[in-house]
Length: 146
Image (cartoon, rainbow, N blue to C red; front, side, top):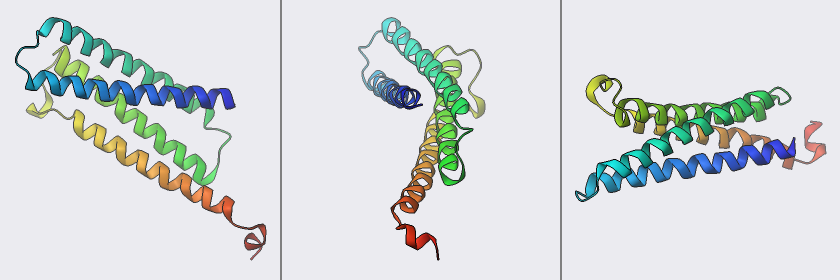
């Protein structure tokens, strides 16, 4: 179980890293007119695709490991799952609508930033929920008897 947790933690780190790289390169592409579209487009498309695959793998690992948990701890992990889902959805949205342009943009605007914001909110809810578990563990055993 500890090894699975370490793998999920490392995967979360790589997902956050991939997302930040995509964001940084996308910003650089928009502000610099001298960047050629070919190499940058291929790199960003590959980063989006790899980030999506990492997100799906993490979601599967989390879903398989949720059953033994209960209470606020399980609630915290469910919030983490929703956060990862919205991060993967944002990468998929970017890949399908912006990079590959398979379909026209819905509502003619980029919604991936909204999805990332929603995922950050879910991660904040997860921290709050898991913090409640930590507070419960820090109480003395005599406090629980009251």
